[in-house]
Length: 66
Image (tube, rainbow, N blue to C red; front, side, top):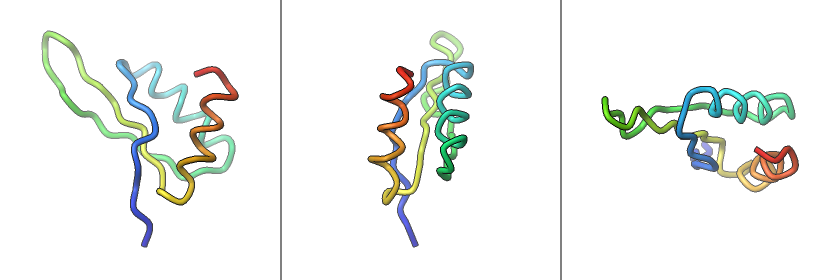
C-alpha cells in the first residue's frame, strides 16, 4: 500500500480545484483535504498524491505554472 504525500497547499478552493484537475488530467491519483479551517482565515487545502507519484505530479504543477 502506498502512502499519500502532500505536494501542494492551496489557500482557496478555486486554486485547489485548478491544481487537482491539472494533476488528474495527467493520469495521477489525487485527493484533497481541508486543513486549518477558521472563520477569520478561511481554510487551506492540501493536494495529496501517492508517494510514488509525488515527484512527477509536482513536475506537472511546475510545468503548468500553478
